[in-house]
Image 1 (tube, rainbow, N blue to C red):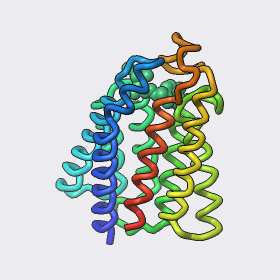
Image 2: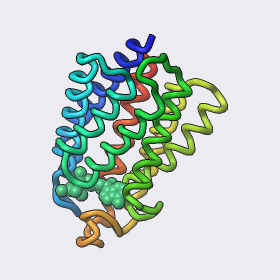
Image 3: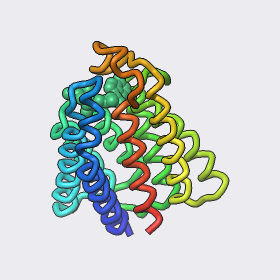
Image 4: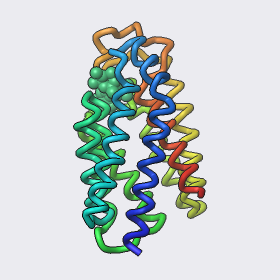
Length: 213
Ligand code: ADP
Ligand code: MG
Ligand code: MG
């Protein structure tokens, strides 16, 4: 049963890798408007590193918790950059919701997503309205908990929360950046959504599709 959980985690990470690769140019173009243009590459390298490290750990016999911790370390290392460090910390924190040698269900997945988002907020220190991925992640978190409590349908809750995150990410176009690299360019970001907020919503939408399978 615990190996089944590990297998699902490996596939989920492959889905994130494929999604980041598919959107690499879009994310990069977005980051180039007010940032340094490397967000597509960061997400592609980070997800690829995470998926590879998770696979290696699982092949060496690691369970779900350890697989996610290793994946998080690799994401931060391979991606470089601010978002890579935050995503890496998120995966490592998400691992804490699983056991190495026990099964897991929808509750554990929700707890993992919440723990991951909380790690991003804690480590990055961004407030809502700072024009970062937090502006997508916090509405996602709230809607996920609300929907899951109401329906107990994990995939449906993730999909709905991802749709809310997408809207919130697009709404960041209206704010001037105050954090991260793009803060030095301030007003240049006005009219453009935050790349990290958008990529967060795109990855969570893909995760929702995967969970529905
Ligand atoms: P870098 O800014 O180092 O080039 P990326 O381009 O990969 O890294 O990521 C940029 C994204 O990181 C931003 O669009 C924003 O969403 C996110 N980000 C930056 N600083 C923070 C922070 N303090 N908290 C949360 N997210 C942040
Ligand atoms: Mg960048
Ligand atoms: Mg950079």
